[in-house]
Amino acid sequence: MRIAVAGGTGTVGRHTVSAAREAGHDVVVLSRASGADVQSGDGLDVALAGADAVVDVTNLTSLSAKRARAFFENGTRNLLAAEQRAGVRHHVALSIVGIDDIDASYYAGKLAQERAVSTGDVPFTIARAAQFHEFAGQLLAGTPGPFAVIPRAPVRPVAAREVGAHLVQAAEAGPQGRIADLVGPRDEDLADLARRQIAFDGIRRRVLEVRLPGGYGRGLASGSLRGGPDAIVARIDFEDWLRSEDHRTG
Figure (tube, rainbow, N blue to C red):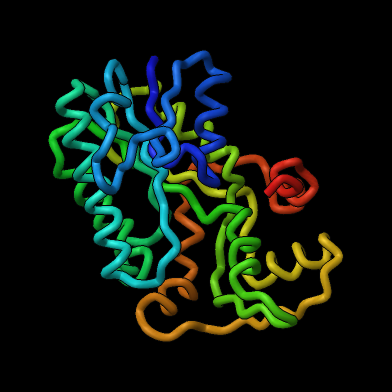
């Protein structure tokens, strides 16, 4: 298969690209650096020529619901239009477990993306995954200084490497609509993950857990991000991930 990966240089994207190549697929990375800009649409027609499937793992860092919706709706619209022109017959979108009742902040954008994909004209698969093991470190990096403020969030984190492999399997299987969620092997708390990562890395910082206000904060604290009982359970837990090359190389 020829698989195009939108956002193929990011946290999940690089693992998706690696998993697809290891499975013997021809991979095209859609990124601004490669000349294919999902947000503007520039270069997509050329990049998608001959593609059998597109895996969309594009992302942005924002707590603005307006900005997140605009980003994901615009990118999805551009991808689906280019896929139709190129004859691509499968669009795979990565989303997040448990966000159905959290139509706020970043999650509002992911829900808007799911709606755009499911009402579009390209056959699709929506693959939801739990928050990544990498997420705690991203939050730590975003709050420099002696204190790290981490939101109250019961999660069941999964390694981005396993998410990438899961997305390639979804692309290989053909359009399936919404498929089973992918979650990690253990229930965790986001603040505790941050504390363990700091201790593992030998960094002296104090983690402060706070409950964020509004619908976004309530959703994070609700436990819904752990997913349901019917989810696929991944193998790599947080401690294994900390000791892995994935953590060492960022």
